[in-house]
Image (cartoon, rainbow, N blue to C red):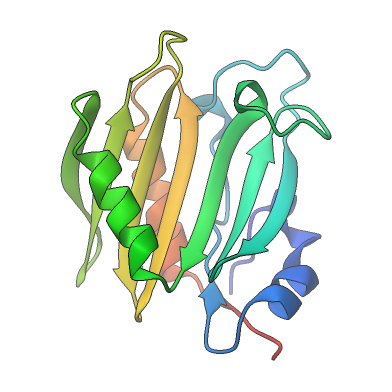
Length: 167
């Protein structure tokens, strides 16, 4: 059985205790750092675990303690709220978004969105899907098109055993 990528392992117990009953978290076995834009640091990523309004997520930042968009590298979320899925579907329809359906694994379709709305050149690329009644998403900030890498991440998340709630 594979484990989540090393960057997430320190959070496993916290994830288990913060997940609401009946929810699971899916994390990738690796993150292709080649897909991320160069950081001002040594390419170290700093994870931040949060739980709010029926969702649990881990956001990756380039600087410790920085929660600004300029420090954002990526995010992995599970939600059981239809509002979250509606939000993702709305974003996928923005005029600056390039959106296509993707096959994550047999029986699971996802939506890949490449958003280039700002002037920075670094867009936000997301894949989201529904699995076992929950909404999962994987998002990375990247200057280049990383659809294939993001699809590999989503496939890993969908295939690996989930982290279950301790509640």
